[in-house]
Image (cartoon, rainbow, N blue to C red; front, side):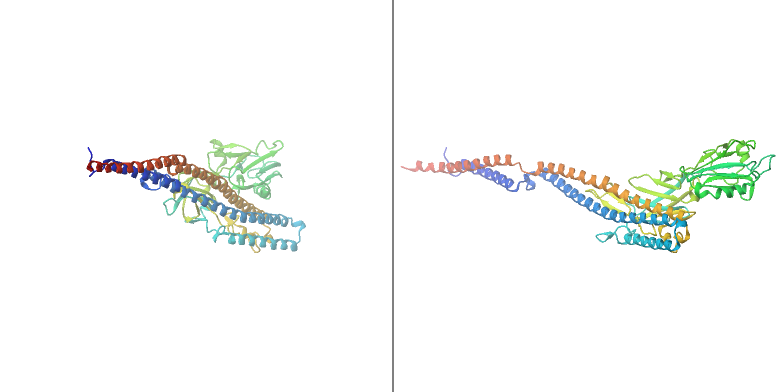
Length: 516
């Protein structure tokens, strides 16, 4: 049958030619752009996942830039801290030289004080001037802000990191579970017979040993225990051991030999040299480990009920406390909260709080600190929180001397610990603490840069490489496949044109039927 109103072969040829041309256009577009997915119709699911991967790659690339910038900030701060460390070393040298009073004139000591003043002023100047892109680094603007901190409970608080999360502030609850103690030995003052109570029963040579050194002291028989206390205290700076009567003014109550400092590093040892000639009257005792010291104790009764045992050495005890439900480790009066995702800090407790069991105190961290965004997602798990405290002389080297916290600024002319005061031991302790403070800050910043920032950049770079490879598989064009498909589309397009031409020519054959 031959019809002319509907040229079905032509329609079929035209449809296939259209498909071939469309396929040819797709292949040419992919080869010209290098992408397999150029619009949603190419691969809807692939477009969605590739866009998500691309967004993640963009975030990770910015995270690397953030880490690099944070590393630059830390390097800038660390270089300033290095200069401060050098100045503190020179201050220590000047202080040690000034302590040599027998070989240093007043004029030389005044010259040393001028150098001390200059070095301390330079430390404060560096603290105020260290900056990165207008951001002050060491003047305390990046330190944490505390509220409700009572000096009567906490002498010194150092917050190294605090993760606020969605909170506007963090409450810190401290509760002691084991009180800090000094090393203590006790000696009775009541003896039946002999030379009477409250005196040395025979000439005695004592070896007093403490954390600072050892001294040997001889006391004549019959001397009151009050004089023995004075003799031992005359060397307490050299030994780290002090003495007192159990009941002030009452030598019959006995004596206490005590380490000056608190904690397991401090101890007291009292030994009698030579054999006893007093029937063993010279004996020292200590409380059992689980018993806290209390004033006004009765040695004979405690010995009788086994709460006090004979000993020649006793060691102090560190304070232990629970901070926000976490057990903090102690070192003397100092508490260190383990490094956690939320809070990391050191607290120096006051003597009153640290020496009482179940004592409590509370304060709040209300803001501050430096936050570094190290991941592609903005949440606390991909952020690092760091404190950059002030290293000005008025904030550096805080040392508890007596019950007062004293700083490096007290070494300046007219200060409590300047060279004229000759408080060389106190000044040396402050300088040591200041050096330790700077070293701890540098160490923590160095650990952050090495163990967090550098590893973060390397891990993110690896993640970017893997994600880029995955995105390429999904979205990028495979040129080998596309060129083969292009060749096929070209052949089909050319063949379609030829077939369409033939189909159109076939309809013209009807004219042959009309010829006579």
